[in-house]
Image (cartoon, rainbow, N blue to C red; front, side, top):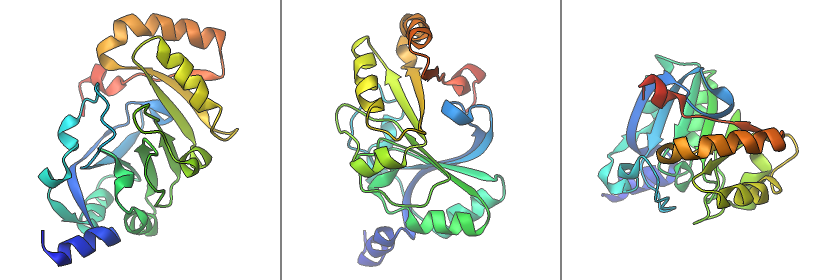
Length: 209
């Protein structure tokens, strides 16, 4: 990669774009709403159950002009969701500035394990045991989405819920490969602890991206 490209990436004026697509938000607080997804490559958090492991290697995803990404989003949507990979590995100040200037709402889905950047209308925090969020992520979170893979994850979810702000919405989401086992346990848990809500990966049921 040449020095000019490296500098543009550092400024956030280019990003390692894995994919971009217009779809229906499948998870969490905005389930069922139309949004343009921007998936940025690169992640070292290393969740063993990750369903987009192909996003981990940033070098396999071409650096793309951020202005072009924004232009593509403007054709389709009033809301953009920036996800990964782990999007906060990159500076997101420039892309969110450009999106907001075009009256596009900015949402992010992140582990929160990297330095905070960007300006967000909705900040979805999904902590991972392998690399915990930084303090700023807990403070900014509008939504805490905890993935439940086994029974021990309920304890982890409670520990993370204790760190977010009082206005943060709390969601428990079954890990897809364990849905049949974990959904009954999550239902029972939410009924006993009603501060939580259930999130499902409805896009997988609908067979859309």
